[in-house]
Image 1 (cartoon, one colour):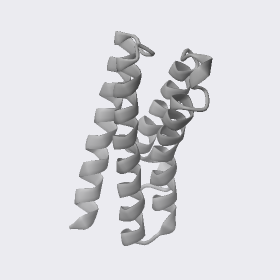
Image 2 (cartoon, one colour; image 1 turned 90 degrees about the vertical axis):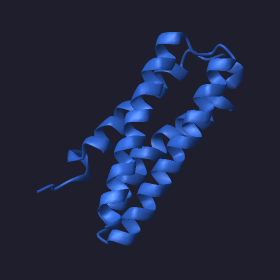
Image 3 (cartoon, rainbow, N blue to C red; image 1 turned 45 degrees about the horizontal axis):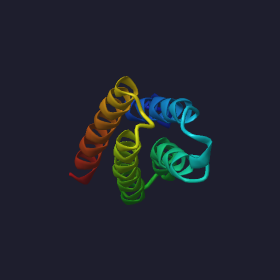
Image 4 (tube, helix red, strand yellow; image 1 turned 90 degrees about the horizontal axis):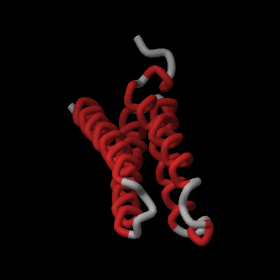
Length: 118
């Protein structure tokens, strides 16, 4: 039995994604600090934060709502990653690393949401 949201694999992977986003956006142009960098960081942090808050609420419906918010933040982050790639702020390896991890997190969130709905 889980005793903390930190034991959830999806939270662990989302946490790792956040750290990767912070490290990678440190390489972005300084002119993007209050633009794309700020947006990407907020979205990335929102994913594990919403998983944690939802888990801690104790009610299934609230948990589902926070998981949906985490999923939506992931979709927002995916868009921003694509924009960063098009602007050549991300190298191929960083783009692939982030994209793969984000896809994994989104799939896990989808499965968790589906399992909690039934």
